[in-house]
Length: 217
Image (cartoon, rainbow, N blue to C red):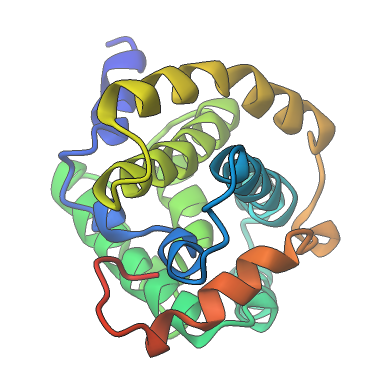
């Protein structure tokens, strides 16, 4: 069977992975008033995509290179140490657990038990699970970037920053930017991953102090 259909299935926002409740700090930025100016949302989403490309995609790449148990454990600890905001750490662990549960249900013939660890962060188990399920690295990386962009625009719609049609139009226009970022970090291992968007860390750090919260982070 062509792998496009299963890949599209995993990209569906209706998938019960918990990603629908993840804003990557956009809710905190909105509450801080950082998205009030014209063009602010686009700048924030650009920063989120850059952060994903430079800080997350190297881990997905390494998931297709590292197979030794010790190397995988070291990668998970490395990722854990890179997370600054407590809300982001909790969300990452919750999403990682949900992703493994989902993949185990969709692909019962694949053994995911060895991925259930104390620090099963989403980005790492995302790459490991897709590799185990037989998806190509390029497809896994593209799916990851799509999820980041999709979740940002979905969060913006539910916060009332933009309407559904405008969000869809903006999302379509950003796919080229995603490909450009992917080309910039191609082949980069997780040890070279960087946090390059401090505004995201600031927005994420205030999430727990918000009066009301719609998202994990």
